[in-house]
Image 1 (cartoon, rainbow, N blue to C red):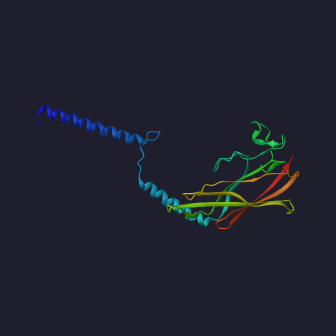
Image 2 (image 1 turned 135 degrees about the vertical axis):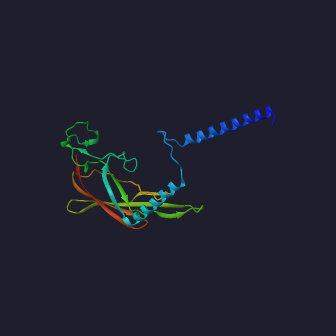
Image 3 (image 1 turned 120 degrees about the vertical axis):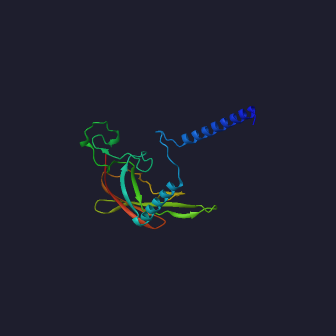
Length: 224
């Protein structure tokens, strides 16, 4: 090999090594998070997560359809699972306490179950144990449908039924995954303002695919 050939060969090797180093650096940077920590990407991590999730879903199916949390919220603040502003009524001003300035005398605020005459009631609910009803599309991909409705029954404190709404659609959604973090918003509108007084509101939440139900009963007060 003559001198010129060796020189050209050396230049070629140098360029090749430089390209390999550049590609390796870019790959490394693509795996860095904002703190500069390198995380190995491995299919084994996804497999482990799937095993854990499958175990959770097996327990889920045996847990029973029920509410693990429910509360009245301010309309328009429910933006997803766990994202809401609780409804609190201010007796002194006759308004929702979310507008009360910081440092106000909170002794003037009643429970979250007091509403103004004509005010819409929004009940936020976190259900568990609902059914993931499977179906397949033309591509044979399995999808899961969640279908929940509710009855709303309004009664006087002595148990006399005053009005009811039957089989109100609440949510129907189809997903590629068996979603478990789900929130419901059960809306009761005073189309004609309720007379001032106390009432019992019974919500019968229904998992339509299985026919299972659970009840939520709220004692509310309507004031001026």
